Image (cartoon, rainbow, N blue to C red; front, side, top):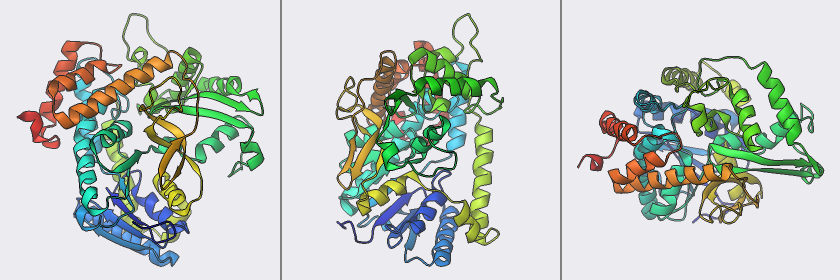
Length: 459
């Protein structure tokens, strides 16, 4: 195994990732810790792989760094002696999320994101977990000491599956709680940091008590104190003021998020960090019951819009690769990436803290030790260690348990191909409230997604 100080080898499975591909190249050359290492790109689509390798080589040449780039459509060809394997793959992401959304909506289940909770989250896990476990199996022979970092949704479910059913070291990530960006943004919003601040001064950090955690996409700020003062009322006032002027959008994920966040904050006394997802986790925004909700029940995920956005983003990637857009522009407009920021800190012994999905280990005192939570962690080459958070508030605690149970059942169903367990996961899910509907959704999705699911489901 390579030791910190040597040249790190990072393998990216899914090089053409919508959220990850360009960022990892940018970060690789910007980081003094990583820029002498090897970036190995893997994508099953040869044209996408060729584009990403071309782009990476151009960026390396233009920035004159010693980084090396290699690539293959066969991951096993480039995994030997890797130090980090990053999962960023997704097969026909928007298409299958659209299928999940449409079939579920037939039976009264609405998903505005359709990738973590509800039937959409469950079936995306069924599609992605077999690939993640296959990569982990390859690692046992090719790079047994490497860290496997999952960046694929549903990140917690895949993280749980890797923890239970793989023999490699792993943790999982989501880009929503990027450090230090998130803390800086929160402090700017409430006026503690000036608008042009790029870092948090050490003396200010020492006065800050910001407690954020929970299951990925259902994470909450349960405490926000600064210099002994409770900032939550100020945050609530800020959200309420912004909600008054919130603009309407046809996109399901950002639609009325401030209004939903305000309702959730008033209900639970905690702030939903990922409102665009969290509003999908609770049954009272589904439109059940007699009395209309304000602002409205959530609306279904816009698969067509996401497909167009992904296509447009890929055109920009191609323009950078073919020279229509300059590498200077690529470097100017690039930004940090959560996974490679963490790899940089681990490899370079930088001692930074990050939000990571891993076992609770007592950080949340009223949730199980092995609860798979997104928490601020200290991390080095030995792995993540969650920082103490305290107790989760009642009400939210129940929701955390229910989501965790759904995720654990989903992971088990994905590796056993047990339809009874799959149905149990469906009816445990917080937004599925009818057994007959659950059975119909399950059976119709199994049939509609036959090409994307393991054949064991049909034996």
